[in-house]
Amino acid sequence: MAENGIGARSLRKEDARFLRGTGHYVDDINRPGQAYAAFVRSPHAHAKINKVDTSKAAGAPGVLAVLAGDDLAADEIGGLICGWMVTDKNGDPMKAPPHPALAQSKVN
Amino acid sequence: MPTVSLTVNGKAVSAEVENRTLLVQLLREKLGLTGTHVGCDTSQCGACVVHINGDAVKSCTTLALQVEGADVTTIEGLATNGELHPMQEAFRDNHALQCGFCTPGMVMSAIDLVNKNPKPDEQTVRHELEGNLCRCTGYHNIVKAIIAGGEAMGG
Image: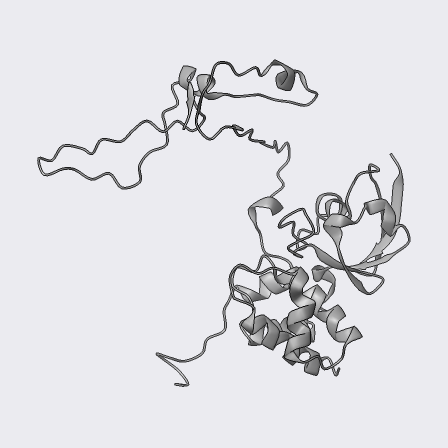
């Protein structure tokens, strides 16, 4: 193995902090007044949403907000974007289905 | 709320905890020692391993109140005067980590393993590591590091 240049061994710079327990992962971040989010997932893989009743959750102590798909729609928050939009032969944009961040009317 | 008093990394500490507070929550949230990680919360991954009176224990499955009066060591307490513990050094030298998330638990388990089983062979190391999961490196270099670290510890 070469001593330097291509093929040479090089020690990683990040290992020292990982080995000492001083890495900084997302769960390690703690800011003043930090709030926490919890996600509730549909028990059904594909289903029509008749109603989401958030009243009990919203009334629980310490809860700042409970948001469902309709709230995102009311706030005009768009869906998740496709990271790589392509065009067809005529230059027309690809047809991307709506992909709301929280399910709206239907669980896909 | 009850108070728990213990020694963490050589320092006497006490904190108010709920009956249900886990040791890992005490370490991370009350004492700010975020080197101990919660990977699975179900005792499988071993990212939360710390030493309680010298024994490697999963701190996500230990109540804070159980460690009253105990001597707890976390990954932050291994280096002395800035010098890495021989096992930490061996992990670095053998490229036994990539993302580093499982590393604190791996190192804590490895030190207890070598303390109780000096000069372990490869099969022993692999067997003893069944409670620590790594999603990056495929264990090969971790096993190499633990054997090397064991030798460096004078085991």
